[in-house]
Amino acid sequence: MDRYIEKKKFKLDPRTKLLLIIAVATLEMVNVNIYFTIAVGTIPFLLFLSNRQFLGAFKYYILFLIAAFIHVHRVNIEVNMFVNMFVVLLGGLILKLAPAFTTGDYIIESTSVSEVIAAMNKMRFSRKFTIPVSVIFRFLPALKQENHAIHDAAAMRGIIITRRKFWENPLRAFEYRMIPLMISVANTGEDLSAAALSRGLDNPAKHTNYTDVRFTKRDLFAVLCVTVLLGSVYLITMWLKVK
Amino acid sequence: MNKIDNRLKGKDLITVGIYTAIYTASVFLVGMFNAIPIFYPIFMFLGPVLTGIPMTLYYIKIEKFGMLTISGIILSAFWYISGYTWISVACILPASILADVFLKVIGHKKFKAIMISYIFFSMGLLAGPANLWFAGAGYWDGIRDSMGEQYAEQLAKFMPLWFLPVSIVLIALGSVCGALLGRKMMNKHFKKAGIA
Image 1 (cartoon, rainbow over the protein chains, first blue to last red):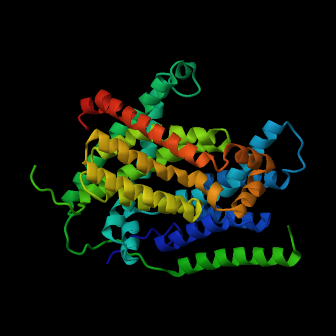
Image 2: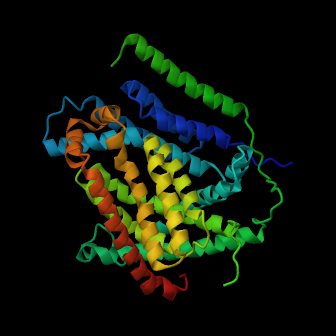
Image 3: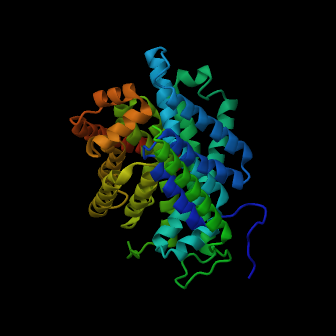
């Protein structure tokens, strides 16, 4: 059987990715110390690098490190209360939420729909869940693209948030952004179901899949790396009693 | 009307996927405002109003029982992964199941049913603030540590426990407005475009 695995990228099994995002989402909410949080935040950075999304990786990591810096020095800085609150708050949000969201972005970027379906079949999910979830996976990038196109068209007419025309009638402007998006979503949905049905989505027989999903050495490597990274940071900071 | 097969087919499941995706996207868009404490109560009202448009579009495609429940299960998994503990699951699941039941009982595609069901479905938005009330002191410590003392104070000021019934009322009002807005948009745009 052909194996559709690109050699260049560091492909992980979707189940490993799921494990990683659950780990990141859970651990970043745990307050151990700032080094542990930074270690957790490094995971999506490494994942981005492994998927060759270099620009995104560095943008994210620099933002994250700035947020961590603000978090460490939040007590020392004395500025205007409102500014302080806003900056600390923003830093906190980035610190807590960005790692999980970035991992989610990585998963959506790096996983093809057939991989998702294959992995969910192996995890014995009912088809009532595999189909909607795979549609979501297929659909979120399309939604982003569509929104971008509508934004461009709106900018041409001067109804984007930075122009004055937008603020003359914000509700109207909102309507002009929302309705085209909805219409294209509905149309895409129709197309998608027509395409899927003509390929026999409703066939009750067992479906086969070209994509071969299995755990490889890469998965072992990734999980080991993450465990060693987090474990060592945790143990060392506990041992040194860092607050 | 001839008898419809009540089992969910591929087409229905695709519809579930698409509209769950767009609902999630719009909720997260509105949810960005939560960064500033004053906007937390406003979110309770504005969230259901703005998601009214996609949800109305979703509702007119629902013909079978169970679609909203599946949406609810996927949404709760999504909220759980983004860090809103088990309480979000406890909010969203019953809300979506109730919404499904009411839609089924009153009748699919009727405006009254859509409105009532949408009110229940929107109660899932309580998942965000519910952590503040029920997750206890540990959650507050986490907020105080990560967001700063001032944010925690502000949040406590704007989100006392008596705000729970108020926000339920706010969500209900917002859902009614959202359903009306959705209907208006439906008549104004979608029927012309041949979607509805």
